[in-house]
Picture 1 (spheres, rainbow, N blue to C red):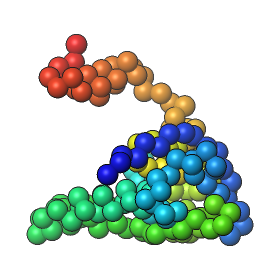
Picture 2 (picture 1 turned 135 degrees about the vertical axis):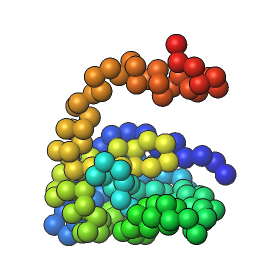
Picture 3 (picture 1 turned 180 degrees about the horizontal axis):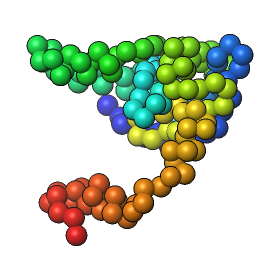
Picture 4 (picture 1 turned 120 degrees about the horizontal axis):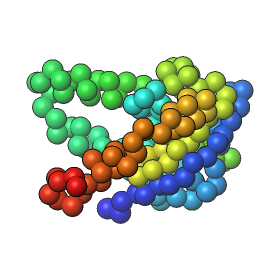
Length: 157
């Protein structure tokens, strides 16, 4: 299966019904295998996450491998799936975002779609800029800690 590599940052506004338009530059990146379907759920740091449907299927396959006799696994799965909703793009490339999820993320009208890897984070515009404008104090050190492990040694020089 071909990997999804989404990229971009898009400021959007919600209409009165809670619909947002997926910008053309982002829609073009959605894999054909998604069939214009997405799944949205709660993300970390008070954002929402949109997954192309084919990517959601990969994630749920992984989750189904967890041993649900273990409490931590059950707790994680319950929280991960909490609010998960399948969405379909309409003829105008819009999706209706569920009100409980909008409330969770504090999204009222203006939002940011932040696409990376196989997902699109949906942030309240205010919270996104607050989060991203506060660059880690030592971004160089963070880069070393995170990216330094890729060389396979785990050593950070």
